[in-house]
Image (cartoon, rainbow, N blue to C red; front, top):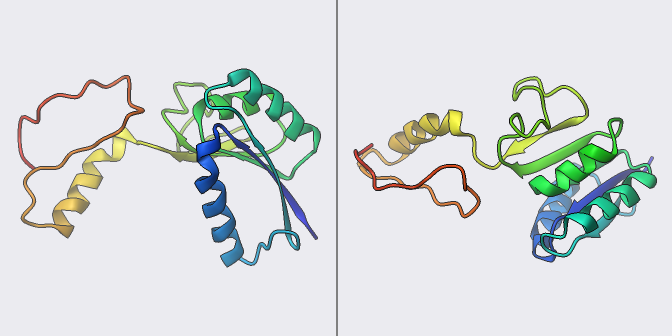
Length: 157
């Protein structure tokens, strides 16, 4: 049986995401052309209208699963279907965006991995402290975090 996965890439520079996904699926014996077929659409960077169009195209193909890697792309897919499962990565705060009901029990047809989970940041620092016991300063860099303002650190680890 061949499964069909629809992939909506939000920009041409996201090809690495598709390559990594195919490699990991291959390790689970999901072989492209044999056990899985990919339908891929790549939008021009930031073109939400094109993401909407490509999302509708992919849904029209009736894939078993939809996968994407940006907030505008997952929003486009979520608006277009409530029945095909959608897996997202690198989405910031899907609860406040209305994409899922709760992080532990997303409900609906969407699930995925957040790009930055503010509620586990303390756990990340604790793990870092265990891995590098002498560490005193840590930083986080993201060009995607617009809600939180960066400031100079006020204390050590």
